[in-house]
Length: 394
Image (cartoon, rainbow, N blue to C red):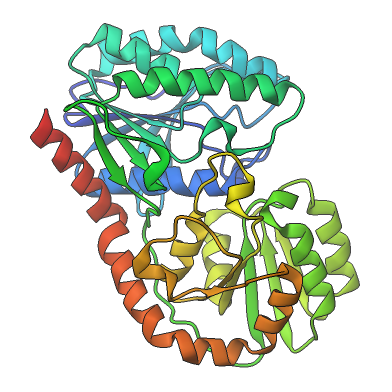
């Protein structure tokens, strides 16, 4: 397969994880949120003494490269990572990978003999691998990590075809998987006695807790996709309208990148735009901010939208959290977040002006919510619970 050989004797408690892993430090198309979630899953598996083989379906770089195998680092843990071949056209390359998926699975199933297959979202490549694995090994235990539904994003052009194919793939996956993790409870209903469903609104890898403070200047951060649907257009207006007494830091990638770069040049006294950053840089910057802001458009405006991971992640880190109303927030956390009701720009301006008062008012609720998130959704505890349930059921 490459210079690193995968021997079944090396991997005694094996999990095959199939996911599009596209971190910032490899160039090409980066998906920071997805990469962070996938890394957290790997960390949780390794912390529970599972050997992990990642099939990376991301096709991050648009260049000709044969299938490769490497060891990759994920926080304090590592795994073996297989990247199927890539070509210069990503959309064609992704389709080609789908045709190659059965061949990849045949080799891995017979050579490595995994006990479990875990797929990240019902993308076509992932579900083809899932189906092939089930055909080759009927007792294979399978898990679907359902982070996003195919129709929850507003795609155009060929993206509509992708959403349609992924919707079909989801229906197939739900018929054959043993368990499903969901970030919102209503995303999936149990069908039959074999189906297990775990509520997983966030999964936290190794984190360092730095309680939020209100020293001057307050640093407000946004980390995520730079898209209108995420409310980043409102965020830009908010940065422009606030005074220099507060500092803003934005990290991420997306279509509004160039507008943010121009805003950073114009308001360099109070706004820093870092674009895509690697995991080490992200952690350093994240520690520097006191508050996290989320201006996502209303979830009900999107078909089957989901509650953002980033909110519970911020709560776990002890940050002040300012957010537009989001469906699906756990009851144990909702009182720890300051909800920006009404017009998001005006509500954001009002909240930033009294952020010190908000910190004091919500401090008790924030402390309790932080304890709850850390106790239930650390990678070790959450992944350990999932595999314990699977082993008990199968």
